[in-house]
Image (tube, rainbow, N blue to C red; front, side, top):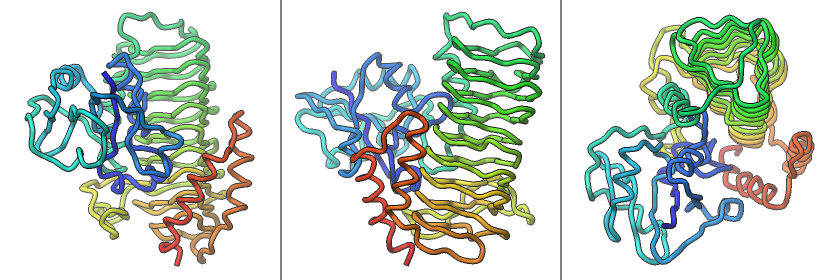
Length: 389
């Protein structure tokens, strides 16, 4: 069977989905695509917007199973999807979960809400804040998926483990003289990751492949640090998708960072309003600041964006793609893509200069800022021009 993960309401997940399909979002330990491919024991392709299809190509066969890329799998859901016949679709309270179609798949198959009602539980990502607010549940599920029947690499005796000891180290993971508290959830240390001495970590927590927790870092779960990233200071209930750095002191809470982001030393974000009111966040789909239903909500930052030292982000700030934020004071809570500045004002970030920075940053990780990456950022630049005006 050919499996295709499709985008549904991807505009609600901007700016994170400016540069990736919904299925490439990380929640828990794995991306949503990685979860499906592991549970299906098969590769998947993507049905997304045209400008992303070059990097994430669509593969079609005579029969195709379309699966909502914003929905995380579980055994009951996978079983129900595999039982679908051609022409049938699976829904949950009006949300399209999957459809089995004959012939070429297209967006025309994604508009129906009627179908077989799924009776089980569904963990889905619809808004950016779902990523951190549902991260604990997803992380616990991923931990069981990845570690079931396997034996952890040994943890050095210099560490202190509090709780049931539900901690798993992949090959090459290192930790010395740290405190790991597993009473609130499991702790997963990915391949070749490192937790430096003096760090205190409360689960659920995932440190993905090649990532690093700096000296004397404090982390409250549920938190995920994606692959090839660095974190330091204080982190609470946040998700770093990957290839990003928050390597210095400063607070990051109830937040999501995309890829290729860098937070300068002593960058802090507020995650709670002084009046304890519900946080409103810029919503691209609704073109307004929308209620999150949350009292705690921090920073949402798109790919390739940066902050200078001592930057302060107010509660519920959204930063687009390839923006550079710096200076004293609190900048506004919606910063569009390709902006340069801070509380005193913004100017447009020259596209070619942004490309040059992206090339330098990616080369440090041994990756190329190739024509495909350049075309995606060029399209994002064009799509977001009205916000800068």
